[in-house]
Image (tube, rainbow, N blue to C red):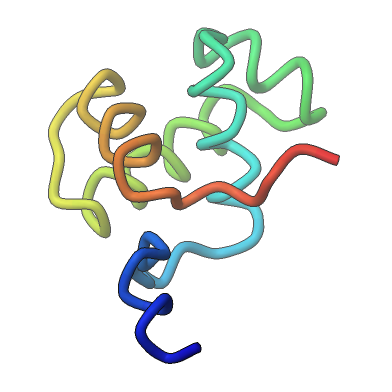
Length: 80
């Protein structure tokens, strides 16, 4: 069975907080910063702060880069 473990995609841990993961999920859904703020009942400034944290931890500079990395590396929990 160990020989099959190599086929499972390995999710890297970038140290995203639970809230950063929630924001990232909304980003993957195509929402703007304002829409994310409305959806999560946060201020625009707070969402912007979380997004800057996501960029820093994922070593990206754009929303598109963060979304691409999240999808490529399986950083989001599976939808239930």
